[in-house]
Length: 579
Image 1 (tube, helix red, strand yellow):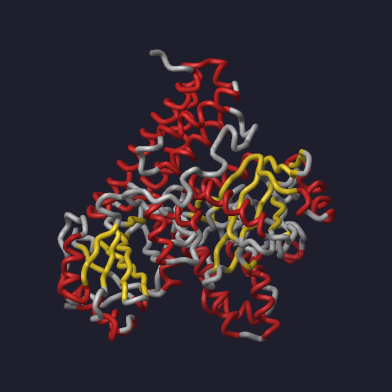
Image 2: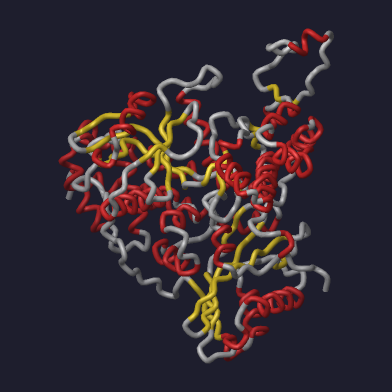
């Protein structure tokens, strides 16, 4: 019996979603081989390819349906019928929420982000809060009270799906137990019912594989992460034990690349992670394990729910106004909304499309914990009543082409969302006003480290003014203004030539030629001209950033393919490796 057009739509979307998931899992499975062989570049390539995969499969699905259905594809009434039929196809899947989001992506591409409503697509998931039978479960349980710490750790490490040998299992177990005794309540370790639960899948990112789990001690549950590293000779070792919730949260930060991890039942996986780090939102957790489109969908649902439960109004985001973006926020919600301005400052040599390309570059690149992840939206709808006349006037003045009003809704044609952070310039001014030398020292040190770690990842921040960096709730300094970033290897670092005569030095114009990607590190001293104490701290800690030698040396290192160790935990917490 020939399928009806709406059935073809649903079936085609499901076929391409299934292929997407299969390819996603195959890419993820390659991570273990790359990790054990020390092929770090391949792991980064896999991460970027996996991001591209989603859009490629959505585009392929639309092309196939255009071929099958022709103009019928653009009849919205067929999608109205396709949605419930597609929902029935989800019954046997363990990833139905991802399948719904994939359907939404195909629909939005067909209708160019128009006609967005729950009648034709899954604005609200039909699988929210439903438990899915996981069979053997996503985690392995070890009876700590019955078997003791040594035996449990031995079994746990031996059960990990590695094929490479351990450098010294005995030493690693000793290190873990010694650290655990300083962190965990020892009196409860032997309590009846105390267990260790470990996610069966490993979390691969850059040079590490992370073992993630929790220890149940009576009514208390303690999260833990064991980073496993390769010693460069094909043998593995445990680098540290992380049990503090804030430290675990940093590992799953929105400023880092997505993990390569095998996930059969995403909703249960995220639910387990949320018990470990409840301060981390569900959208961020989905994104952290590679489902960034699902993270985007969950963010939208979470945001709509928040609007229904709050009454405050949107405001221009605190900080210095940008020359390329206008940014606003809702004080009760930790996110900013960034809209491209209609006209840029004359000093900005970039186009609207160029800005979009920069944000996509950041999405695909290793963010090394120093660049904020963003979500891109088209035709984002806001309740008009939550915008003051002052804010509406501001948005119309600088980004009017991106706005339209439909009834009681304000539609913004294109924007990015990003986690709210305290702008670094505001943080520094506050520390100076309070005369908080510790906070000031930490902020300037973090600022310099952020620039250096970005450089090690082949990113030159371009506009490095304090206003373009933010301070997270964990005190980390993160870059978030991407319109001037370049690959470090595309830059030409030069020393400022000596003037031939005094009049040249006094001139308002440079007396030397300046190419498009020429960079003069000596000029960075202007960044810290705001206060003598700021300049003193910066020069003492990161004065090498003012030298051509530092930047050219970093370029050489990047060109040689050196991947610098930038781990999401403190160096002083790493285990000793002497037996």
